[in-house]
Image (cartoon, rainbow, N blue to C red; front, side):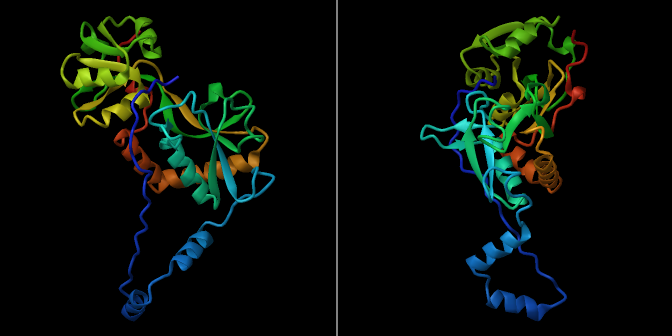
Amino acid sequence: MRTYTRILASCAVALTLALGMTACDPKGTIDEILTPTSVEEAIAAKEAQYAPTISTPVILEEGYLTVGLRTAETTAPFCITQTGGEVMGMDIEIASLLADVMGLKVRFVNVTSVDGALGTECDIVMNVEAGNAGGATVVGSYSENASAIFRVGDPATLSADDLAGKTVGLQSGSISQRLLSQTDLRMLETSYNNLNEAFEALAAGEVDYVCCDLYSGAYLASFYPSISLSGTLDAPDAEGIAVAADNTALQVNVQSALDTIQTDGRVALVRAKWIAGMPNVTNENMIQGLE
């Protein structure tokens, strides 16, 4: 389970549509400027661009993609529940983009399981590893799960020799702390009540490194321009979108929509907002020489 204690006050990402002008028809361009498009016309044009690609019974509700969020397990930067109950984060924005490409509106529901919710409470569940999907099928990948090391300095994959004997901040009782203890890497540990305190100590030079969940660390590092990823303790596990195993039509549509928003750069914009554009992590980012 990712641990997160910081509440972010932020607005949902804004999508800006750029209007391109052609030089081959000056009169047409002038006419368009003199006769601006109405709001109704703009909405109709967008709806025509993204006509619904699926309907019931492939999805639960006509015209809607119902998205399951496991808010009790998934926290920043993927899912942040604010004091008033509003939910925001990477999962919310990526799911909204998927629905847009599929020509659907989006609604979110809180779920406690993947298998039990798919096809009954929701159409898809965000942020699921294949190994934790039960009987569901995980489509695509947009994030990874791993424990990681962060430091003050430029991004670089370090070796075990670089880290040996150095000070490291960890959240007390975290998965990352237990994982570090299972390796042959010996560092001087300082425990903190939460990751905010650990990253504040790192920025202040009180510890050399912080060890924590990869994406939680990347989110907090985005508040400190000097802090960057130094590598992972374990091989990263891909996380994608869970769909009912027998709903192949929805699987195809979700995969196509995810491919679209990854190719055209919209996922990159979401990553830039929440984790300062950290690239997807692979086995090549593992700390070298670690046993």
